[in-house]
Image (tube, rainbow, N blue to C red; front, side, top):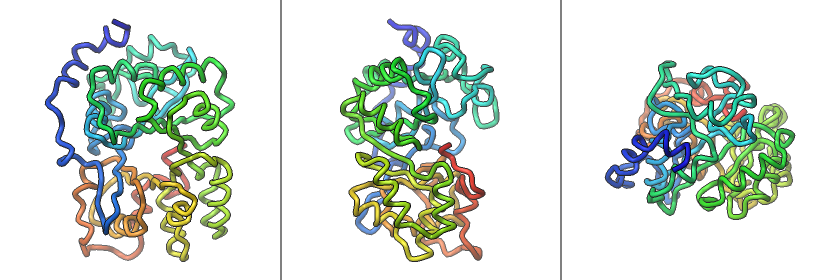
Length: 325
């Protein structure tokens, strides 16, 4: 048994021994006007109060056939920690920059919940996912997005080799994403079978498109930057800004054979329902949210709406920030 298994046997046996989950009752998609939109579990959350990146939720989602997202940053031994930040201080019980911390230290850390309290869930590494999924009945439709938070300059042959080895056994269930097309190319070229995603909103590109109104140019540049991507990840505020000006970004990417994910709905309630409905009317393929359960049961016909769009206040990026940095 490996180090990961020694540390987590009891916990993971409990997770994998649970009765098979019921996909029909799970928040994994919305069917609207003949089109199915997947609900992506942002940072592995099923509910808003879930801690991020827990093995329990990730395994649950993979068994259910959900679309799940985790983030990756490179640690000192050139593998990948499943964390959003470049430091561990905020999200874990540890301290320091991820790039300076060895795998053994990271594996020994506990995650923190949304209030900062430690929970009975350890930090995961990409290298651990194969062992994590051993014995798990992964649903055919399960998709785990690996969102690389760095760029091509951070990669070296050791990191690329570890990535390829780590994703190989379950590559067909993974889709890599990044805001750097060169990093996408480097990593996916080394990992046969992995699906390819690309986020063209980085480095001020989304803001520039909104200011200039050059939405056609935005689409053309995105397609050219990552010609093999099957999915693009777009800020919801960009999609809706284009729509208000008569440009259908989702339709434009569909014409180029791309699926579209809209990110990130951080809070779900009646005030966002009109904008969620508009995204669905535009036939968006996936919506990223921190609260999949609430989104799955949201009443899209709720008439309550104050003047002006509220989704922009409830998605990260509303003030020029993006949740995919």
